[in-house]
Structure formats: structure tokens, C-alpha cells
Length: 563
Image (cartoon, rainbow, N blue to C red; front, side, top):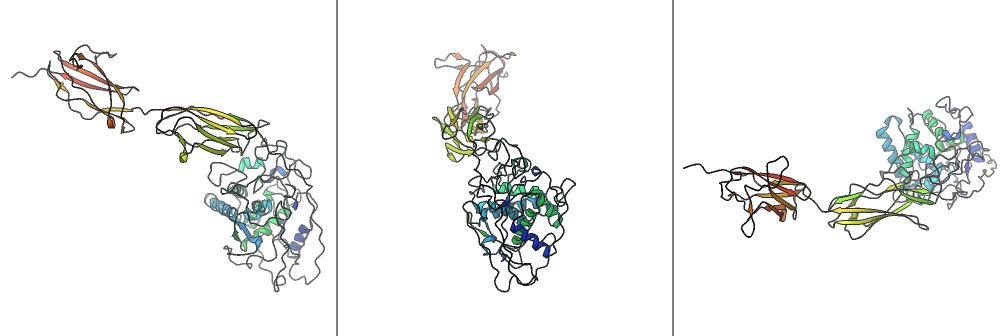
């Protein structure tokens, strides 16, 4: 991070030559007065800044590079994206998409705010150089965390740790985190899920851009009004220099910009791994012409390139001195995995072919016992089973969220019944493993019914003319191989096997009143023939499945009427 902040300012630091040029430009062009504070507690405009932890970034350092003199389009032209433009006007594709998605989201939930995506682009430029030139993965998450220096009160605001290092890896002091540089305490309040992955990650540009938009729209601000826009920017970082820098990029992007591939954006001067963009000299006919009509709010400061305000005549640009730099610091050690624990996983049980209602959930903690974010956890199905995660996979890796927890994908049982294991493994040097037992049971009937409603009658000593046919089903589908017990029962309150009345016959022709049977294809079962003895009356036949589904059938023995 030493190089990351080589060209950044902090509140209270000596004004740089670039900022001095900006002030001179504003004075020469008769810029509007400084914006008024939102409340009595915000005294930035009056010269007394509130405490650093009341700003989104904790008043962390920011990039001070200014736009080139050659703008991507002439002033007043359409802000539609041109196909080409200067290198500085290019915004990486994923970053630009995130800004526009945030603008659309706020337009539907807080239309009165009128958030322009160009304001998010301006803040993203000074905070992270458009997330380090667009170095993000397919989901919009930076390949490595973007962290500001420790806010330890030594040249910066003093903000003691509020997140146990979960976001910034620092359990002593807070640091600004991610593409939009939120301090952990602010992210905890304003964090959003901008890409719909179920997580609020300050290192994801979609999440961070939406959170920044909501933060800027706080209260009843209308960002189409210059005073409200200025107050919103000052709430992000309490610094007039910061406001002028953001305003400069905001006006620059409003004149036009274009999309560039991820990873190819221009990095601010001094950013680790970035190339310096030299000042751009305006071509003949530009730089001494008329000034475009002033917009509401402060005008942008003088651009990199040393140009003077229109009307001052040719002169030699004043000498500049290099801006003060932040002393190199050693990046904070990334938190390491200390433990992996069960985060409330319920017993894993499912019926063959069904999805498990429960999912494995674990929590990772660092060596200090605080929740550990972005820790990869690998879930694996182990054993003789055809249960699978979504997509037919037996192994899936996911990362923990800000609370240190991660939930395995949905697991679906196959046709094989019995037990198997699901493991959760985190860490590489000293892996931590949790093992869960899962069980799959066979489908069992949830209904048993006759296939017709024909009355079953017989004369004493005769055979019932109609056979009893039933169907066992599971979720309205016939279930084969279902065990069914058929018993002739008494009519007592606690039914028992009846020793008289209707009965079946065994192979020897003897009367039996209990049979164990099994359904065939499509869950159908036709009972053997039933015979009546000499006793008249109404009797009951009970059919019961192994899991307790019961059907009672009525049998009547009635003497035939006299001729």
C-alpha cells in the first residue's frame, strides 16, 4: 500500500502544488462560495472539520491526480459514451457497469435523489483509481483487497478497530476498504448487495458502488442541485481539496467517457504497478479560447498540464514542487485462519430424490477469535452415495462473508439410501475440517386409497364378488414395493384381529385374517379373495403401510332376501 497512496492527501496536511493550482483557478474564475454544511455538526465549509470517523472513508488519503486539459468531448456536448477518447476518460467495463447499475437502482428506490453515475465515477477515480484500473474478477470483486493506511491518529484520523479485522485485516485500527474506500463501521451500516450474490462485500465494485450511492443520497439530498451534491461529497471526505478534486473529475466525465477492457484503465501516479500519465498539452486553438458557461456549484480546479485560466495572457507556468508523500508503510499482515466451527447446521436428512431441507453452514475465525471474511471453504460429498450439489458436483468451494460464515450449496439426494458424509475444509498450511453425517431414506407412501368405491358385500358362507384393489402413492405418484399389512379387525376402540367374520384363505384352504403384501408397479395392490363365514353383520378390513398410513375398508355380510 506504500505505492498506493504515494500521491494522496490527508486532511490537515500541507497543501500540494496541484491543490494550490486548483485554488488559483477557482479564484480566477470567480467560483461559487464554499458549500454550506448539512447541519451544525458539519463545519467543513467554515474551516473546522468534524471528526474523521463521521465520514464514509474516515477522511482517509485519496488520489490527487486531475483530469487532462483535453477533455473527451467539447463542453456542453452530449454525455453519451463515445467509442474512443483520451486514456484518462476510459473506465474499465465492469467498473462502469457497476456505476450505471447503482444509478439505475437508486432511480427506482430514491428517484428524488437524482444520483448521476458520473459522480460515482469521480469518487471511484480519486478513491481507488477505478479499482486499480479495473483489476476485478467476473463478479466485480478486486483480485486483492484495496486497503488504506491504519487510521491510528498519526497524520490521519484516529479510529480504533470496529470489526475485529474482518474487513480490513487490522484488529487494532480501522482502515478504508475496497474500491470506494469505506471504513468498516460505515460499511456495517451502509453496505449493500449490488450484484445479487447474497453478500455485502466492500471489495466488490457492484456492492461498493450501490452503497456509495445510498450514502450520497442520505437524507433528502437532490444531487441535481450543486449545494446538495457538494454536501454529499464532503460527507464522504471532509476536505475542500477533496471536493475540488472530485468536482474536477465529475465535470470531466460529464463531458464524455468511454469503456475500456477490465485491467486496462489508467492508474493514478504512484499507484503500485501503474504507469504515469504525462500532462497533456492542449492543441492549437485550445486553452486560450472562450470559457464554457459555468455550471452550478464549484468549477473544476486547474487541470494537470499547467494551463492558466482564460484571459490571463501568456506567461511562464509557476514552478511546482512534488506533493508530499505518505511515508512507506508495510502492508498489514493478512488475518490467518484460527478455527472452523459449526454455525448451526441441522441434521442432514432427506428422502430419495428430494433436496435436503438443511444445508451445511460453518464459521471461520481468525487467530484472535474474530470472524474471518473471504476465507475459502471446500465442501465435499464423501461415501457411497449419489447425492450431489447443484450441477451434479461432489465438491464445491465458497468463501465466507463479512460475518465469517458460509453456507454450502443445496444438496439433493439420489436413489441410493443410507448414510454418507459431507466435509467442510478451510486452510492450506494447517487445514481445519468439520464432518457431518447425512442420511437418505427410501420413499414411503403418504397416501393409501381404493381404486373404486364399489360396496363390498357377501352372503353368509359365500365369497365376496368384488376384489379389493388399492394404490399406494408418494406425492400423488404410485409407489411400487410398498409393504402393506391387511388385517380383519374388531370394531373395538382398540382394534385387534377379529376371530370371526370375513377372512382370507391360505394355500391349504384354512382361514387367515392377516396378510403381509407388497404393491406392484405404479403402487397398485389387489388383495386375494375374501370369504364370509356364517356370521352376519358389518366388519372392517384395515390396510396399513410400514410408515403408518392406514386405510379401513368396510365389509358387509348380509343374508339374501327370501324368494
